Picture 1 (spheres, helix red, strand yellow):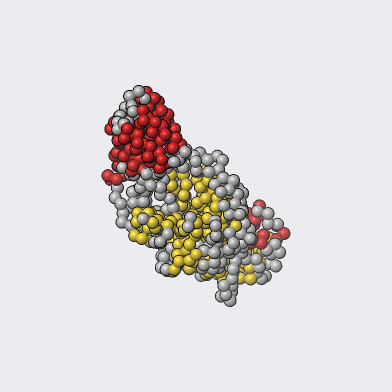
Picture 2: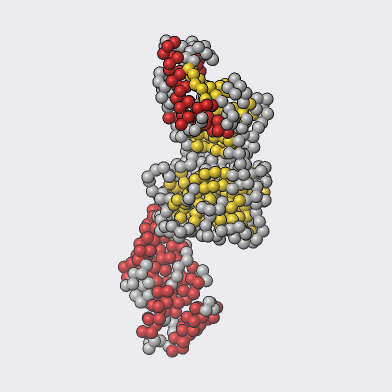
Length: 616
């Protein structure tokens, strides 16, 4: 934990000048020489001068506190603490500002009880109180840490990825089969991939530059990462995107550019499962602290890999301290992040927060958090396993552990989408949408730019979905489906068949809904109708008839009127969304064209439908 010591040096000068008549003159000369050596970073000579000063006068507390300053510069915390202890043994009242630094030394070692006593001593004895607010914050952290150690339980951890070099920052796709991580070798960071028990060096890595702290979309098809000092960087570090071409090959990285990247530091991206929201750390103008977490929303993807994002906004969880290392869970709502300003164990701790809730971030506990800096935390799609890096065995390795109940997340499922033509051959669509019909959230979105060959979408467990696929020259395919609990060994597969546009071809609008015996569109119909609008805009030469149909309940006159009113509501929606009326007709067929027997509820439900028919 770095800190500066301008005040203690001044105190030493004052105190020593007051004692100059009571100490050995040679000791004073050696002490003054040591100060000059320390200022010029000649640490060996400074130590020798302090040793000589101690020999000339063994009772000089000033010598030990200056020695503590020297050891602090050398990052030798053990000797720094020992020097302050010896200094206080000689004089416990003349150097009270050092009680704060003694607390810092203990706190950096995780010696919370000793640190607490030192901080309290500082707040009650030091006349200057220049760091009293910091001391009070450290006292709160010490109390938090002591309570966490008393009541918490460290879970057992297992080695997940080990290496002869430091490895950290695990990132997983939703299947858990693709794991990316950052590896430090010869002061260079590179991204590696662990898949099917094999380890791969990614082709996006460059010599002489750093690539790391990466994030994957849930389907594993898009990779966002930090690149530092690359030739096209705007700042010291920028955020880039690369698209998956094959199992081990990735496209040429593209700098996200403005407004994501600035001349400040942008790094540590976390992309939402569907690739439409981006969270990242930045020191840009407008940050509340030294580093804040910001988020942005995708506006467009263009051929060539370029992406357009909205102006980033800061999160409400940001503080005057530092917040960074975001990880957005697969449900798109739970965020894990690192902070040094919330109550914690010291350094950067990992916290969990519900972005849609109003609660304060929660420290995830002592299995991961220590007195050191913790960053780069991930949770798999089951919501039960956490992944983190630790140097507990010397080098940094990646570990995993079973999360405590209060830290675990709701499991999410995933499904595979197969798009075929009428002959059963796979084809690549232009656009794919998967939306939660209850919440209205877009769960998966791809357009023609870098459409993946393997479509995998992350969805909540036990949900109702609208799945839509569009390709120019084809009727769009739209269907509703229910997804149950997650089945990671045998995920649900949905086959979507696209049919060529031809006159007289009919498409049932399965996502259009009306209340019983009414013609007002239900809100959840909007998602299907949006796809119909996109289809008509994508194929501007197509003309359609919109038809309404009922079951055999009610009179012919009632059913004819109801079905026509429902068809008109769809017509009106399309017209209001700039589909020319010359391209559309609407008609109500009542109960005259059933597609199933009306003797069961299932059959009657199929007959209550809205369709479009291609006219030309």
